[in-house]
Length: 453
Image 1: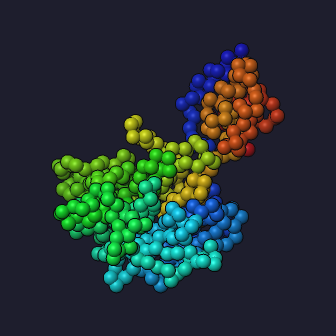
Image 2: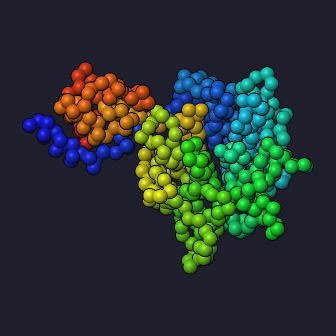
Image 3: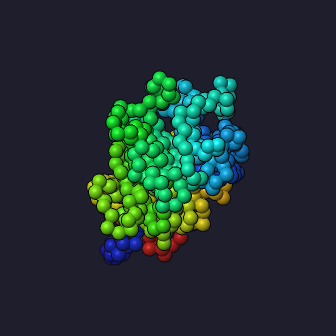
């Protein structure tokens, strides 16, 4: 009779289950503080080091350990960086895919006289892997900036080996120069260049399959996609290769786009899915709508993140994590290109979240302007309840315990152990036995009637 009663409780508990209770927000490196961190990268060289960009013009490097006590300064170009505007500074960092052998890395920063964005290559020192050669700069590209804001700033190598660059619409408000829809400027676009096979007289070349390569209309051949206002952080999904971008809105809407070659994402005809100029009855022919958007009741400046492909928080696998700089909210977005997207708020913080990044194991971090680097983790209590080993804590774990009690499954160690979760067993209540009390403990956790110890 107890078993039958338990099954009824389990069925009632199903709607109450959710990933929210399983997650925790941790300071990843509690002994470090970095002023206005705006980017986090790894070198992909097997060293597992973390590199954090300080907006003023420095790059910090340190061991990927929660016990690390200090950073080394990998690069200091404060004397070259224009940091006079709130959105200006050293904004992006990307390591060459063959960095381990060639030592090349690339930066995106704003400079003055004239005001411009600079994309440059540097080389690591030949004597110290934690120090770059500050005199090794080779400028690849310079883009004149009419105003101090909307600089974009993300640079990243795609799975095709080309360097992608995000550039805002030039700034001010409302795109006064109409750069978002102007294919003859590099502003308001995602650019794509080949840094390994430069043309004569240049430090890069145009990939032959760029959408406007060899055009006869004076369009900028570097453009990969356009119609963007201020793409503040983009990333490639390491599994699907999709390019995800977050575009900061003007007055009303923040948006997330899947960037595809040659597509027009609408700014400044549209802000998200709404007409902007004109404010109604705009012509949306040929425009690509965002896959997700939110209005300014939830946030006012989106910070793009990553599709999670790590192993420590498996309930987030395949979901795009992003945040809002103003409100501090953090969400996960599930989207497969076929089914409607599903968005979940994970945390409502008081942090100004400036950027996300991953380490060499694809574990996700984010930077905040309180000076800390944060990491989302699974609650250890919930891991202990992962009886079926699927790295998710839900009603199925209680069902697994019931099946073991009923001898419906063979209680071998593998069925109560998940290395990815670091969670031992269905012995959720910690009494050393797998019994009905463990199933009841899981149900009570799901219903919020019990707390993690």
